[in-house]
Amino acid sequence: MNKELIVTVILICQALAWPVVADTDEKLLGDESDGSRAVSIHLIPLYPENEDGEKGFKIAGDDEILLPFSTNWTCGACHSYATIKSGWHFNAVDANVAPGRPGQPWILVDASISTQIPLSYRPWPQTFKPEQVGLTPRQFTKLFGRHTPGGGAGELESQDPDEFMREFISGKLEINCLTCHNADPEQDQTEYAIQIARENFRWAAAASCEFADVSGSAIDMPDTYDPFMPMPLDDPKKTPPSITYRENTFDEDNWVFFDIVRKIPNERCYFCHSNLDIGDNNPERWAADEDVHLTAGLRCVDCHRNSVEHNIIRGYEAEEADSKNPLVAVSSCEGCHLGQKSSSNLLIKGRLGAPVPEHPGIPPVHFDKLSCTACHSGPWPGEKTILTKTSRAHSLGIAGINKSPEVLPHIITVVLAKQSNGKIAPHKMFWPAFWGALKDEKVTPINLEVVRKTVRRILAKQKLPRSGDWRTLTAENIIEGLNSLQKKTEGKAVYISGGKLYQIDNKGKLIAVEHDAAKPYLWPIAHDVRPAAQSLGVRRCEDCHATDAPFFFGAVAVDSPIAAERDLSKEMIEFQDINRFYTWAFAFSFVFRPWLKVVALGCCGIIGGVILLYALRALACVVKLLTGRS
Image (spheres, rainbow, N blue to C red):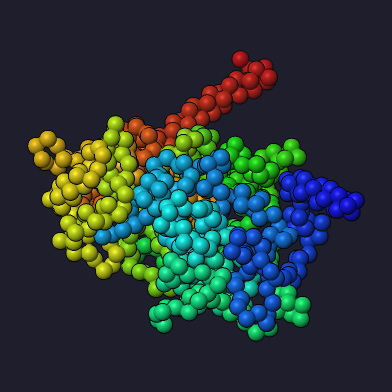
């Protein structure tokens, strides 16, 4: 009896102690460095996730049924997975995280209903939450998970009961540590994207690495399919997702080697952060120069640093207000080149060998009105803006994509616009186009499924180009679409396009008005950085201060599927909140400045001659006085 009592007491004490252990802040093996700069050898066991979402049994090479390893339970054995989830690449779904400066949104495109709309889980102005257009986290992940390192929406649970079983079959899209940290050349992000399209979220990370092959599709499985207890399917054409680990993957102890690096190679960043400018004056990548920092030997992560929290530095001014990273202040353009006080309160100039610029002859007002990137970053501004593609918007790097220059979304660059801090900086930009509901002067997008069922049939009368460009819309198309949507919409049905809000008036006519919801979405760019010898103003002031200089007076294209607006444009100065006449008059004065210099030099010569003449006469008087002559 005493033994039973003792055992009971011990069990109770253990039960009481378990929550305490779970809540401790004890750091794991990989959460802090021991000071060595050597690369840690990652020879580790693999663990899957079991049906309860917990750590499964260790994977062995001779297992009959092999599940994919889970990065949560495999990498999480040494690195705090919960801490990593708080990093910038994964925390967009966390409402408690400061949104920071607006960046590139996810652009949802559906050419069949003439839609391109900015989405973000972060509360950035002019963007919409995915749920506002009818996207569940699962649907969002399937669309955009291809160019993410996992986590974020990929780990959210859908509130849609119809998706419960589908989530169980597909699993979560966990943070894929290998996306960035795997140095093996066989790390394949295209395969990662393919697995996400198949809804093989649980298998995606393993499929992208060098020692595993995944076949089958979760998308083909019935709702009754159990990936943990697979049963034969009635349809032989449908193959359930399965994984095969390649020969010699496991050692004698069933451990696996990963070629993990701390300093991430640039190529890993490029998959999600590449751009392609479209135009005759924009050469292909092999014929263009790299960012001056990369040419000098720096890596992306030399500036965009982070700790185990993965609170990566974005590099904009005043970022220290949004980030807890101690190197934020010294990692901006000014921080490296001009010096900012670091966490140790030291003023550091020329970090990482950065030259300290003196900017001789440039009036100080330029540094109050312009960002560093205004002169040094992005394409050289031309008479007209050009189209550009980005990895995230156009699926760059994935086999089989539409490579047409006109494919949607239409992103425009370079737009020199004023930021919220009052400084002009180069931006990328696109014009939203979507069907919405106007209520209390606020426009919200209509659920995309409702639009597709209603508007797609109407717009089908207009041919959809194979290039992926807009189909041409007429006023009649829009009127018919709005009338159909009005029956299924609370508020007034409207169409946003080309910077205007289209609605039907009381007489049944289509009218267009200005509205904040129709304004273009802009986000600042910083790369590629040009050296000082290729910066704006290096030739002369007229690079910007001329009556036709693109910096102020370049044409910014208005993008719209509506035929009447295809050739419209706005002046660059409209995005800078500057008086046009004053700017033009100031620039016009530069026409006469060479004359002014000649006149000023001539006047100085005349004045100098007069002074010299009287100086000589005064000298003659002094000589006469000294010689005693009258």
